Every structure is written in C-alpha cells, then in structure tokens.
Image (tube, rainbow, N blue to C red; front, side, top):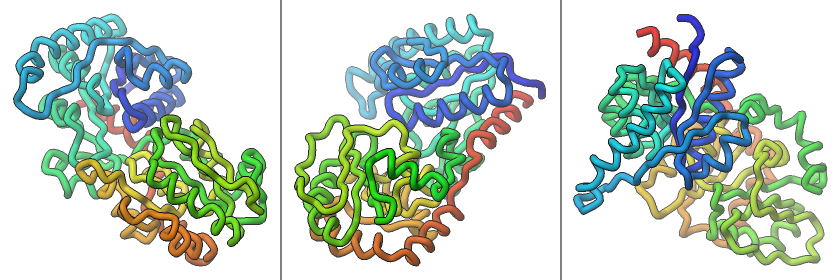
Length: 368
C-alpha cells in the first residue's frame, strides 16, 4: 500500500480523545510529510485550544451529545446527526480523504456516518471499557477497531475482535528517558536534585480530594524530606500550603509539558484516565492511582492491569486523606528498591509504539 494522500481525523471534547489524535497525526506526518491531515471538531470543544497550535487543520462541524435514554433528545437525534454528517461529508469531499480515523467524542459520529455513506475505510481507536457511546455507534459501520490495552477485548463484547495497538503517545513522552532528564526537570521547577519528588496531578481538571489530601500532609511530607510538584487543575481552588516548609512544595494550575513532571518524579499520585495509565506505564513511572469515583468505574479498569503487574497501587477516592498520605505514600516514596521494582513492572506492561502500530493498522484497513 502506498502512502495515504489525505486522512480525516475525528476526536474531540476531552484530552483523552485529542491527545492520541495529535500523537497519531504527528506519526502520520513523520512517515509522510506530504500527507494531508484534516481534523474534525466542534466550536466549543477542547480541540480548539490544542489542535490548531499543533499545526493541524481543524474544521468545525455541528455535533450533538447523544442521549443515553429515551427522551425528546433521542427523538431529535436522527435529524441533528444527519445535519452534522452532511457537514462532515463536505469536508471529506473537499480534502478527498482516503480514510477516516476516529478517537471518540461526539464529533466522531458525523465523521463515521459520512465516511460510511462514501464507502471510505473507517478505523476506530478506543481506550475505555466499556467503549464510549460515539465509538459504539461507529462500530456498526466498520470492523476496523483498535484498542489501547490488552485487557479490553476480554472485558467488552464489542471489542472482542479488536486489534491491540497501544495508545499513541506524544514523542516527548514516548521517547522520554526519565533518568537523563531528571536533574534538568527538577531545576526547571525549582526542586532540589537530591531529595525524592512526589508528582501530583489529578487529570486535566484536577481532583479536589487528592489536592486536599496531599496539601493537608504537606508538613509531614516535608519533615520526611519529600518534595512535592503539585498540578492542582485549572478549575480547582488553590491549595493552602505552609510557607515555611524546609523543602520545596511547588504548585501549578496546569502543566502542558507533562514529560517534565514525569521526569522530575520518583512517584506519581493521580487519577486513572486512559492517557495517564498509558503514559506512566510506558515510561515506567510508579504511580498511585485514585480512580474518579463518580463514573462507570472505567478509570479503575484502566489502572487495575498495571497495578496487577506490579507497577502501581490502587486506592479508593474515599480513602485518600492526609493521614493516608502520611501512612502510605511517604513510606513508599522513601523506599528506592520498591520504587525500582514498580518502575520495572510498569515499563514491562506499557508500550511506546502505539502510534506506529495504529498507523500500520490504518494502512492494512485501507489496503483491504
């Protein structure tokens, strides 16, 4: 199969859809700088903040949240969806797309519908169990389904025949050498090179329970020589941290260069989003996972395999308190041998080649 001339990528709404899309777009461009890459998005999605600055063409189309129950929204869905699909089809025709690759989010459905009507190859990449509602609909139009983790096909009937390719990761993370970058990363944040670092990040929105637990344990962490790099989340209130701590406790509202946080860290404490699980496993960063409690437990399912492999710990959100940080996190981060073993186990589970594996799958789908 020769190089693709034009590809439409669909994915929006959250970073979990957009970051793998961008990593895959970068992979496409590395392998063929002449390929035309067009991304579909909605006017209000996070994709507007991430895709254009990355240098990719973003076309806005109308997209509507799909109802999960029988209501008036469901009655109006067919008309709305075909309107969005017509808009997606105009983009596909204009750029003469050879294939549509979707990563989920409501904007993906119009892209899948438009590609199906044109008999174009559709490839779906899914990282969650159960699959998101948009990708579940898309699976009615294609058998070309790829997943990010080896546990997914066994846990969801819809994914039984999916190809495990891994999660496309940004090159800054997929190629990260934590040891080589550690001192520079710590200097970047004003951290000391000689003391352990706890990296705290509760996802793109932050996690209030984690924020309060770690900041509440700030004095005890500092007394034990543990530095903290704490990404609070742009939508969370600033945490209260004593100003007279003997070691650094650095807070940030948001961190775009996560690879620097990963490189600075000896241990991470965070949620169990699919991207987080894929990234920290790939680079071998020991992690304490605190899955988001108000959901269908997908974050717990994301984190459990790497924890079972020995690469991290799993704790319920309700258990995360300052006392828990003092009794569990501090002894762990002060145990280099245990951290080394967890790092080795995480790296053995994770993979760094998800972008290339997905690209090969796309080439196969187009050839078929």
